[in-house]
Amino acid sequence: MKKYLSLTIFIILCSLFVVQVQAESDENVTKRRPDRPAQAAIQEIRQENRSKVAENHANRLERRFGFYYDRLSKIIVRFEARLVILDNAGKNTADSKAKLALAKTKLEAAKVAGQEAGVQFRAIVPAKISEQKTELLAARDLATSARKLFQEAHQLLKDALKALKLISKPALPANEEAL
Image 1: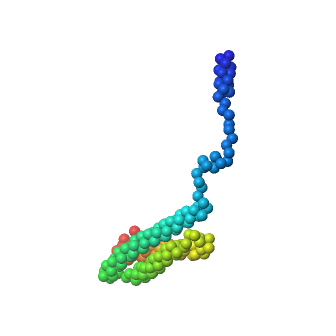
Image 2: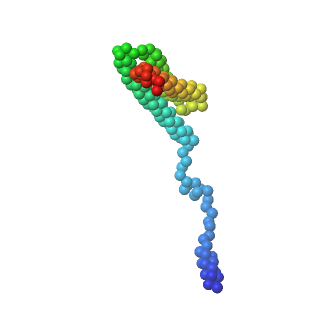
Image 3: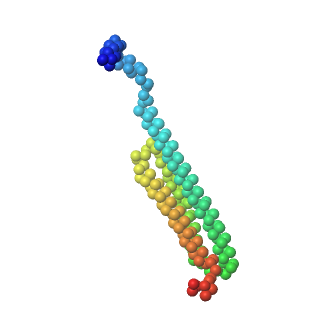
């Protein structure tokens, strides 16, 4: 019985506090809304954002490719020093030198391709992105080819290192080879 009594008191209290909803005119509603920026302003903001994204992308590409080039060129310098030592010791390093020279040419080609990709990404105007679709794709393809050239140079360095390890290992005596 207490449940029903408390329920009826609750319903009576709720019915006493019912607030009448008043309709407002459209003028009042629009006055309370913040002003929306014009369509031209929205387009301008989008273009600025696209410009920042394109600039950041070009910077990241140049920084990354520069890092790859510096690292691989330092490895090549150390590798050449090791080859000079082995040449002075009378070892045959022709195979390693050939692979190293090929790696150097690939590395230089990758550096040039990476720089050109950065220049092409910077040349794209964000306002005309739909018109410059082919330029954007060409810049992307150039960046991809630069990355592949860096990978090929790295692989050639690894192959030259394998050849160098075979040269620098001391020859085993005849009786130890049979083991």
